[in-house]
Image 1 (cartoon, protein in one colour):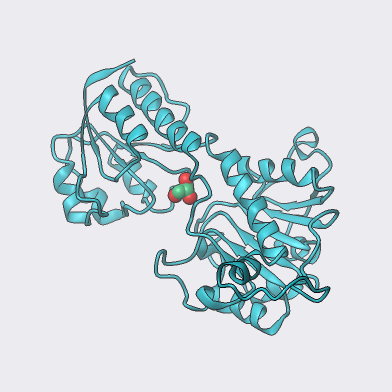
Image 2 (cartoon, protein in one colour):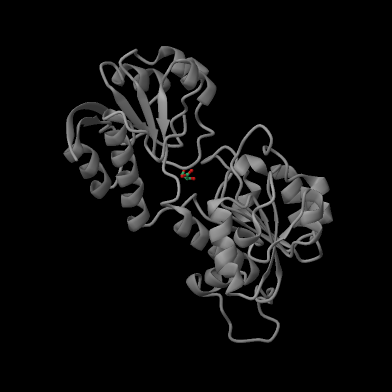
Length: 322
Ligand code: DGY
């Protein structure tokens, strides 16, 4: 369904396949600058719009919400995470929020497996040998990594993405452990072992994979204490948000050899990440590409369009956050 009466401002640069969806379905104008807008620019361009489409790199904090023009009734975020927005302030102002749940579960779970395998098998170091012409031939001592098969996987946050990671990990004969705000029903748990505190989860995690949302209660929870409880040669992976990890503590654990490696797709302060992550051989880092496949990018655009169209007809969108 098209709703050409709905005025939509698209604040971020999208692949053409995604931008086309917005332009074809709504009276859409978009940011053609090729850069992230400042808060003042975003507010100015929202003038006269019914809805704005932003991403996780656009901060919609209390001040921005206060300045949003009264025409704006919906903020659509092209992300499943909503930690870049002040949801309370938006709710108070009567602005609805739509996000992109579910459609990115599989690509993010694929990325989690990629991080686990890449970190365990020292992919960065091996790839550098090839690319830089430094490989001198096969040797039994070369780049000895760690098995993934049969190991214990601790998942922090057993939501939709966490469960998609577990599904894949079962194919690697991994034993699944998890910590979540609440225990899942037995049929959803599917044999995974619940730990009601993070410290116990850590003690049972050869791989600790972070898949919980960033919030007041999860920021900084991966700290020296938790890292110190991991078994020898553990590997930490993060597909959620960087600020769940205390960087200095993780770097110390990696440098001291207390843990073997980290696979990180997300970082605190992106893109200005802690410089140590750029050079440490046991950090397999990716630039926040968990959901970055064409199929998922298009599906994320589709779910925002469908949600916005439902909202316009007074039906509650499946992807409405508030
Ligand atoms: C998400 O959808 O939250 C991704 O991390 C992109 O921001």
